[in-house]
Image (cartoon, rainbow, N blue to C red; front, side):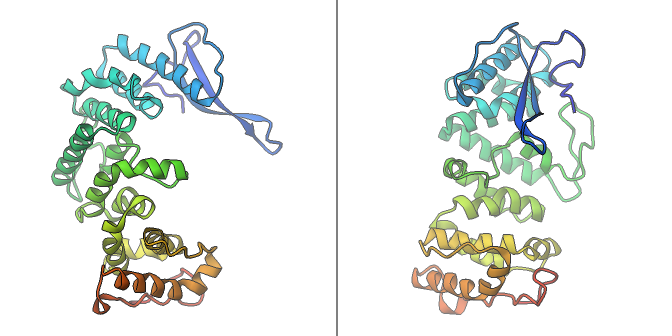
Length: 306
């Protein structure tokens, strides 16, 4: 869909199109990934992908500088934030003083992403914590334009602003995610957050970036299958394996990451290995070892009780 919040869909609108060039059966077609508003009539040729990002970021920031609408300011910040470097991110500082809560949130998220500075991380943690405390299962929130009832589950709106609170795309991004561990832990340990949101933006990131501090939590989180959402989450062998691989990574066990049929055959054995490692490291006692649910024939069709 055309991003009408960013620029009008009409002839003469200045924009840059970001295209994939490997589309179609022959991998020689084009696919439109993004539309970027630009101020200049001509842009210099980029040397590489990173240079292209800096060119586009500069254009978006030019648009942001002259924009007076809080709505478009927020959308411009949401678009530019993932490609900002530390120096360019300074342009977002004035928006931390905005009266618009969602505009402040967008600016703060961009500063966290670009700088990883402790002060901004603390501000983000406090903001997310306040949001969680104020948001119940059936809570609706005003949308960024002030209309009530944006969503019955408002967390997708929150995490569309804190876009970086999700991992699993690449090793480089996983490594960078270590800076956000306090935020991942906040979401993972917040039992009032809906189960799938808690998994996607808290527990799953801890599987990729967590440390020894998180090992016991991950082990016990996997054991608890009392809620319907937890049963749904761990019905997937991929998610069960993520917990095992996390503990293996933390303690250097180097367990193989199997494709599903092999993993199902090895799951009980690998669960025993991570349990033994936790006991050996003094994280849990022998009495705290839990038995892993047996998977019936047919893979993930259903779970048996632990």
